[in-house]
Length: 189
Image (spheres, rainbow, N blue to C red):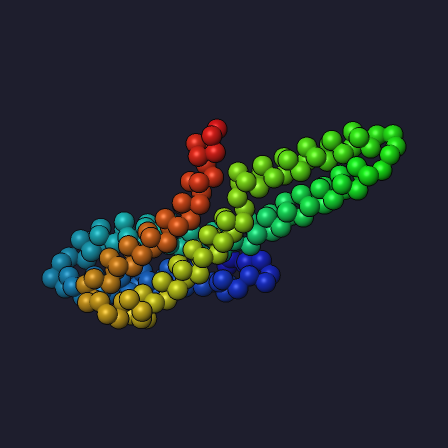
């Protein structure tokens, strides 16, 4: 069973596994009901790609984003505190006179520049927000689909799975847009 960092309330232990299993069961039931005259082997062949999609595009990203949101947030905080600390230290040293102060101010100034560049290129704050939003949205979408709530209660049962797949893809695009904005091609490298 996957354990998440203390204080993270996006998922409870085992929630992603339960969602995956129950969504799979619901889709299997619905497919079997619509294909009562089809041999069981035909249905199994149709379900295999869905099970792969459900695991790789729903469950894995849900768990990953639930872990990554807090991690990127901690990294953003650490970079920010280190940048501020180096800036304050260089300011304080700049006002003193003595051996080595000029060199230390220069090193701290370079450190501030490097930390600022890392923050601008890596974008941990934006990645944290995107991961939190994606994890919450995926979790909500999974439960809404299972319960036939939200958008799903207004749809015909034959349209619900397609709407679910489309919405999961839309949620991923939000995270992907943040990742693409920080890619080396976008950063000029």
